[in-house]
Image 1 (tube, rainbow, N blue to C red):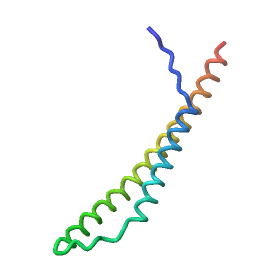
Image 2 (image 1 turned 90 degrees about the vertical axis):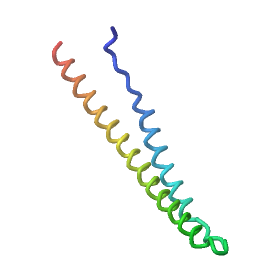
Image 3 (image 1 turned 45 degrees about the vertical axis):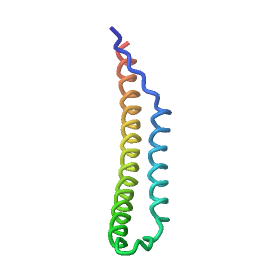
Length: 93
């Protein structure tokens, strides 16, 4: 049985950064949403659908950033705890 845990903190930093940038990209795309097209009688419905899509995109952007922040926080906490645990083990010998 293996009781070895190996965390690649650089990879976690890259994941957190990628999530944050993805949130920025989704947000930027939503900011350039086109005006509702002239769809005749369906124009109000099309406008409502576009508004719903933009609202969901904004939530997605925020959620991506929040997840990226949590990954970065977990990575930072892991690194701190790993150093502390290493010091404790080193002091026992």
